[in-house]
Length: 88
Image 1 (cartoon, rainbow, N blue to C red):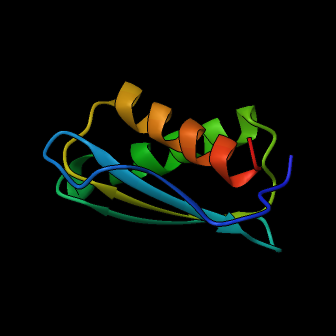
Image 2 (cartoon, rainbow, N blue to C red):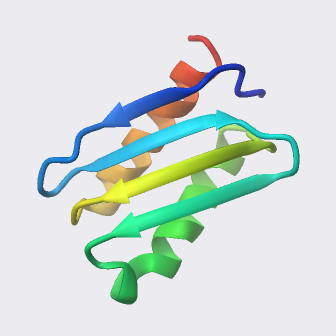
Image 3 (tube, rainbow, N blue to C red):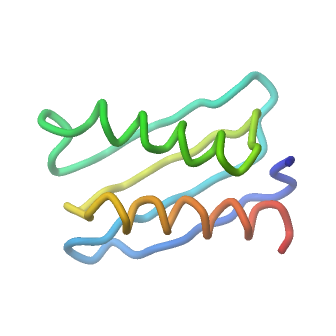
């Protein structure tokens, strides 16, 4: 699956995450800004890579701005951004 256009999902509200995804050409590049980055940054990055792999995305740039979202919320936001980015 290819990301063909820039897409976003989520909000910057408390307990949510804002995800931006765009086409990439050299694997997955993940940028994270989170209020809980010191405690959960590594696991959020792993989650992003896992969701992208599950969706079949091999090349993409993804930015996650997390405001304390639960894992299921982050997963849903990434999946929504991927679907929008591939044109669905």
